[in-house]
Length: 273
Image (cartoon, rainbow, N blue to C red; front, side, top):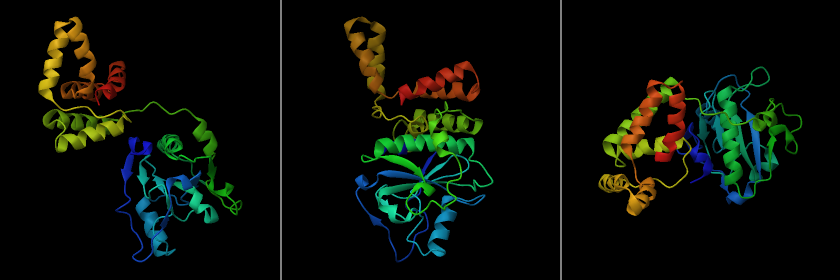
């Protein structure tokens, strides 16, 4: 699993975006990618799907030219595996991974959500790409100095600190829904799906918890008894799923998402995922 897959606003659309019926892109080892290329779509609106359709139908390309698209709402769309040599920076395609932000930044500016997702994505890719050297704008690659792309100060954006994750009302509703599924089903079926959604939202990269309610109850009993065995149980208990606590913390966030208590719950909940 790549680090970038842990970004909260993330959607893997590699298999669903439009592709050419006859052409395919060449693939190379991930070590071939040394650069990250930043683009804008040069369109006021759009989506990864719309860009893919245009690249295939109008340009006769094998598929979308970018590896990632960051849409207006900050959603990161995964379009190609990192090693794919798609078309976006000419002779540098083999060695550059492309990120496109939806927008025409000659007249617009990236949204705050786009900026935040760009910072998170680039930070993750720096860890995922073993041969990474540098991030560049499209017009900084050989042969493209004339290109009006990306038309925003991406270096300033990347230099800003990652914002603390603001949980909106719709997101709080989703968190409560996912936590309820985990509490109801554990790590089976819908509960397993919801658990992974929670981990992705909070960028949790530690190993998943074990799902054994009986063992959890036994360890909680030992902790309550105290002593040497209780101290051992207190360490052991951290590796087991506590669905009740996850639901409690999600409920706190849902009921008072802008309060200090909700901020505490937001920081606490990843420990239980």
